[in-house]
Length: 302
Image (cartoon, rainbow, N blue to C red; front, side, top):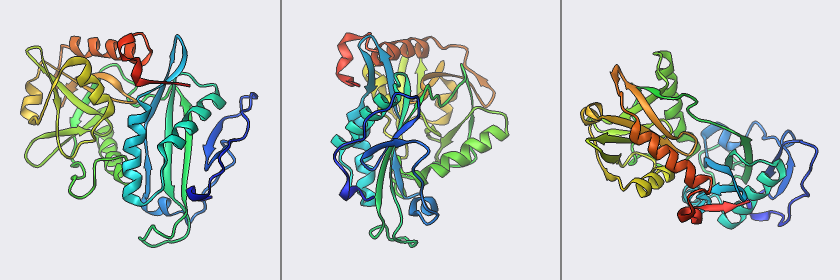
């Protein structure tokens, strides 16, 4: 079904524990939908996704910064000519969380080009939207990350905009695989001028003599968690060289899935300190779980 011809109502929720997804306007059993082998996105990565988190709060489940995530998704969809209505996507996210009775969950909306062409022109293809929710999904499931500079470089923004375009994340997959093969948890992208870009799915922060800096680079995703941490910490945002990063007292990364996570090592350079990162991680947890009453505007209750 094309996004231009979606039903306006979803099927009733089920209470038998069967996982549900939202697919082109309806809640359906997760195992029911399928994509044909000529789906354009399967061949070329012509899709757009977001990574969003829902959290258990004292007032029930709440989605963190949902409008900002969906606005970024809209920007990516515009590039590929995929119709995208943030209001409809909002209701899809909330309906899927309710259908699955999820509170702490990772939320994955995905819009993509379907069948209609096997060439590079996406205009003739059907356009689709789905939302799935996964309980307790974690991107970096370690306490303190061992980081290495990647042998790969990040897609330059002059070639591929730093949005969540599906095909662009092959770059992250290659870097992640290469880092794992060398015994590290995560990869750090550095450009040809020695400036830090980001990790495969997280933005980078550094602490020098108590001063917090959000690493800035035109090739890096404008992270919503990054923006949150800047607001919570008053961090400055600027470009940073790899040398400066290695000289930092403390390094931490952040992202929707990773939240706020200290770096323990960068290619043999150990970071003993983690106080600032842990304090910000605790402050972030208070915000997303509604305990910080000054930031409740960032929560969309399910």
